[in-house]
Length: 314
Image (cartoon, rainbow, N blue to C red; front, top):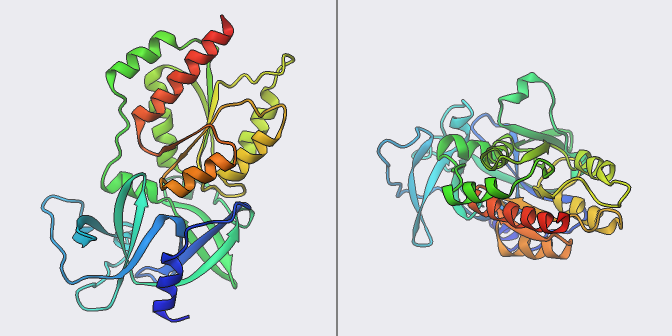
């Protein structure tokens, strides 16, 4: 496949089969190892432009701003952030993956794109061990015997550009007035940065919560939460989309297809914030969809569900 064909193939993708699969673009950084990124995050692939505007006092891995369709976006050297040699974009041909994350657009500088690969999420392995706890590696898979490393880009963005985790005071006050001891939120996400945000939001509201890193764990907890009255002990559930073993769409569908679990309120909380993913969430039976890293939106949904639970308990 030529470079032009590859670009066209990526840029025309608008639908992802809802069969627990992920389609990723593989690419190389300066260490010449293979990395993967969900195609749904990619808006466009560009050859690195010559016009890069330096930004004073920015993170050292932000090379500057580039123009994308009339708007400035950050150009971030992913490899340099990971401790590799910076890409010499001034002297060698390199590329920019223009990606959307939670309603923001970022440009990631890479050495070169490779091929498109489709994998089932159960072929994607979550690394375990203390060495990975502080790393940006969120999963590994293999293609033709070669490892593909999947990065926790949300953690990267949190470290480089920062993520707001503070709820407005009015929502904090409102939440604390209505939250009771028996309210319990379940959240599932494999991103350390996203888990930190979820916990920070729920802690500010003073609500009990459980956060797990895989959908099968969350599904098991939900099944065990159903009491003799047929009701779950969880007030609601937040779920990511991209997760090893089982993605959030599949998790949502399994919950909603189970008569014992179907009434549990599920909000998909994802950095894949385009409209097509909202529509897929609706098709899978999700009750709501919110972009990641929007604390007030998360708090409002929690307040709505807590108030609803309080009325049912009255």
